[in-house]
Length: 118
Image (cartoon, rainbow, N blue to C red):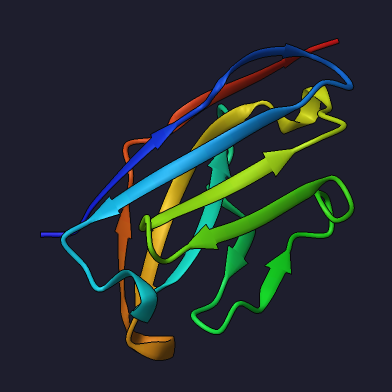
């Protein structure tokens, strides 16, 4: 059974930084695309960033140049370094594992709260 456990959320002032981490178990980590999504109150869950099995990274336009995603296949972790945080980045951040292509499967973590004060 795939398990994803996030950590690193918290409260930070605008302009500050946080680093989120997600530890995975129950999967062959190197075979999965890993990503981060977020959901603000009253909003739909949205894509933030992902790193594919080959190391290619993708970002939402709203976080490009501020957030950096990375993975460590040995430790089975994926991290999201968030710099220059803005109040609009406030949300619950979810770790995602995806496999099987466009019609494949997903696993989600329980989420970690990030709150950015102005």
